Length: 341
Image (cartoon, rainbow, N blue to C red; front, top):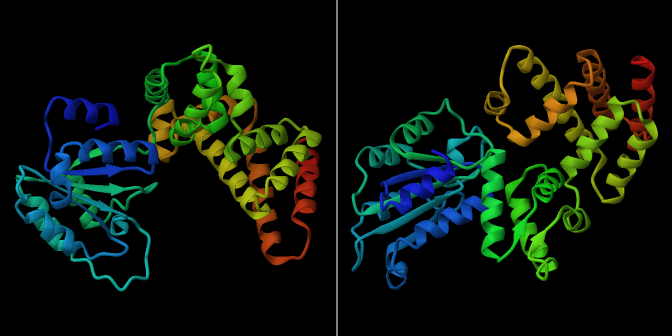
């Protein structure tokens, strides 16, 4: 279920026994933690509420707590964080997790316990038995990539709580500058509401003045200027990223990622995929797909492929030669212009 569906369920008084919160979205994750915490009376929380970090504590401790009856209360809340065993990541850890014990618990959960597993990862390993069992037996709340409309609704609600409103143009500008990252947008709200406390209205001018572009947005602009064959603008943006202390190899990696995304979106679009289906298939933020769809209208597959391969070559040279990363990027821009002239 989506976050909006989850909040409706909780407000209706329906609470399931086991939840999997799937997605790396700090703002929504924190909201969900507060929602569950509020289900336990404050005076009972010390005895009936526990959090277990799977990078530090054996899973059996959490399961043992979950099967225990609440102490002088009606409900026990057990929250589990960093369940890396649901991912393809291999961690060097001395902690031995008994995953079968968790599967057994999921099949017969304690009625008086609410177990919440926060999987704050970009992607879970769907091939693993434990992942399959949790997704089958738990209530899954997907928070990783809220849709643009969901993000806008959450922002408007938060702004309204601060006694303010926000113009549609300002909302679009905020989405643009943060690349649609909900957590980043929410972090900007206090600053924007304070700045506009007299007018009680957030406009696009104040958003432009107060919100800095994300690295992803700067890279998106850089991609478009390269493809549009604007070398001066391209180098200006690249130098600005360097001035902001972004590592050249990281900038190049994000550029490669962005061109790969454009190529993937172009191919899926040609096969009839909708924006939502593309985002779901590629496991990327819907707003990034929206921007990619706007970009690929202007450029050809050959141009995207040429740029992508050029950046892959830069990465290889960065790792194997002593040549200046800045010079390598300048040569890439020049070569791209020649090949696509």
